[in-house]
Amino acid sequence: MKLEPIITKNAPSAKYYSHAMRVNGFVFTSGQTAGNPETGQLVGEDFPGQVRQALENMKQILIAAGSGLEKVVAVDVFLADLSLFDVFNQVYGTFFPVHKPTRTTVGAALGKGVLIEVKCVAAA
Image 1: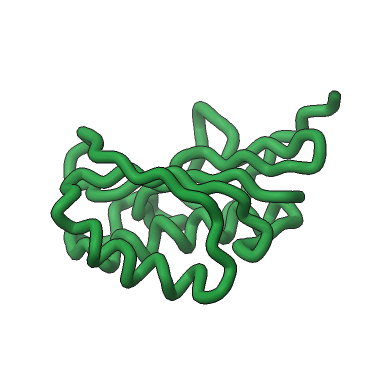
Image 2: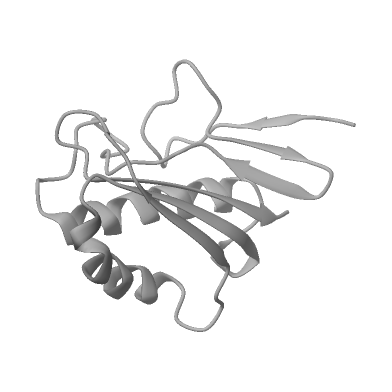
């Protein structure tokens, strides 16, 4: 079994971890927040904007790994406020308009100002 770490400049810096690992035909991404890939700073306090940026970061990591959103098998979502679940679904649906991967969504205490974290498993 060969583990291949994936790092991309198109997602926030991953100083202490890999953006993803490719192994046995699958890509496992690290959790992504709404960090700006160039600065690492959160993209605003607006929840829909944070959702879009977190999903865009995940998408860029998948592309760097030779995969894509259309190959996502499972998504794990961590929300700082579960009352925003419906708003999350509206934005999420724009990233997965046809393909519907399995998904788990849980409430979580995230870092200061972080409203969402998302990770996935995809076919390579």
